[in-house]
Image 1: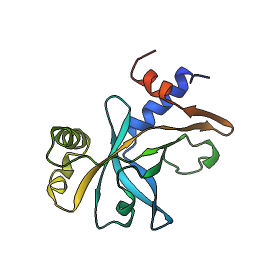
Image 2: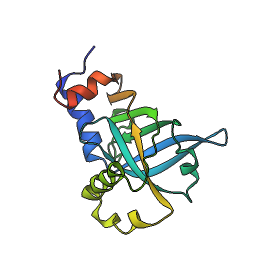
Image 3: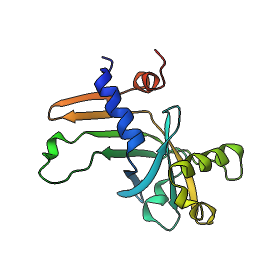
Image 4: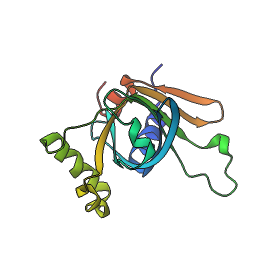
Length: 160
């Protein structure tokens, strides 16, 4: 069943309005989670993160590794945690080759959202990672959920 326009707006808002995601990976046969700034690609096909090789979770960021990512609205004050809009996404990690036009495009995209990170993007122990979205789940209220599919991403792009 396709998402409603309200659900699509919620997905778009979480992907473009959120600044960080919780990224879950497997490292040395154990689950690891990290909090990372991210951007979504203009075509809504993938997320892009920039991470230091010194961070434990980065050891799980290698080509083909599976990820889960969680984005959510702020939980403040007396907000009912079961009513917080949230989006989980999953897929395989892709590591772009540094110095390529594709890598340079990712850097430009990232710096559009985080211009203050320019110096960090030049440090040798940091790298960009692409997280292609294979699917996921949107929860907009208690008991209100919808699957994120390739059709969802196509609808975000304006394709029908």
